[in-house]
Length: 446
Image 1 (cartoon, rainbow, N blue to C red):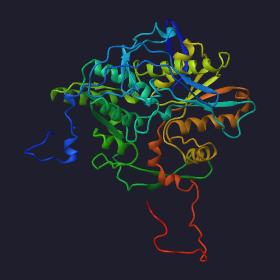
Image 2: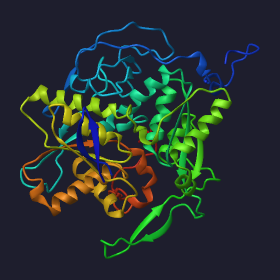
Image 3: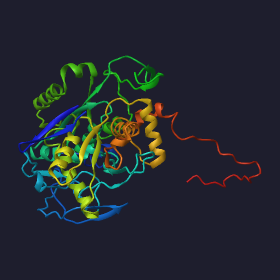
Image 4: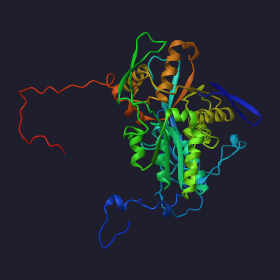
């Protein structure tokens, strides 16, 4: 779907698709670790540094950040800047946008004393059109628990939540939502409770029931294994759900039918009103963290990309930026930032939704060929759509330099193991000839 983003009177098209000792005895470790979140306040500090490291031809670097007054808090970080909260200064080319965030947290993995910056390097995908280059920006490497494009949005959204004095976060998404998992982890980092509304299915069926789905463009039927979780049953511990439940997120399940009829805004409002009546101070983050504030995550990412390119060669340019498009905040930030900055690349949003068996096969082929593991809902579908278009219409892509942004979602693959099994690498029993000497105790297992 093509929509328009307006700024400064202009418009640009974009594609949107936690106990002390009691009676002299030590309490159980698990109980001792339960801290009162009201006693611990989020980190309010910043770091100042200049850092540069290299990966392939593109170095990573940041500009100097002015130091601000350090304040004591429960989330102290020794030197790295992780969980640092600092005043935000937008790029000069985006200073006229409104609203401009007042502060930003540092939530991704950091390099030395710097903010998180993801590497860019040449991605050697097979069978590319003539003179076509694909470069990969690894936003999936911002952390295992807290990874992907959601981190950039949450750095701004959670800074606003803390500034408003909130004590808990509400957000909503699908049963395997990467955004919900990232929000649950980030909230706990900042000592905030997290409430998740997860959309699932009320259809009664056995787990991993095989269903046949016919696609118009395919001659044969595709066998898809769908995990259908019931709203009145334990959702399990698969993929993102495992992390969410480990970090203590409060989960409310809603059927996809009710979700469609009530809507995400009404559902989060209902939960917000309930928490307000209980004396809580909730902060609502929309689906995917995509609103005007969350979009700043990828406006800022454009400044990062621009700086990475300039350090190598100011004359180098990307013709296209390709990224998966779901709730629209990532592609909106990239489109706005690219248009306003000197980057001037075309931002293209591709792929999102339930995967097909062909797309899962593509993920295994890419992993085996390049070592890059894509996810089944976002980047995997986007990369598949991009390569498919290159094969069908090579002239459109010949001679172009493309930056593909990997937005994370690895945990989503754990929900697809049954479907992936036929496509992944082979295994075999190791052959050990009978002539090989054997002696008990020869092989230590530690």
